[in-house]
Length: 71
Image (cartoon, rainbow, N blue to C red):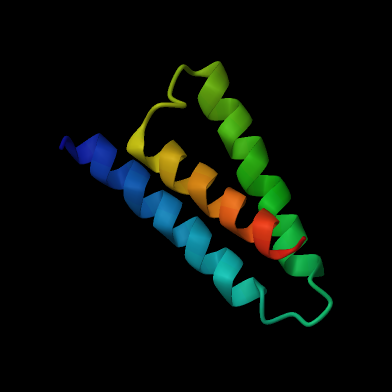
């Protein structure tokens, strides 16, 4: 794994931790906001042909989990 890939994964985990901590907001507004930002990040990754990176996969999987939990 290259240093760049490690940095991407660390950033993905930091975003997920931010989302997890934001979920303490009982209204759910913070988590919805974080989800929106993470989806926008995935759009950027797609534009940069980086959607298959480990970090993008982590974020995508996390978004799937929180979206299925909110249903």
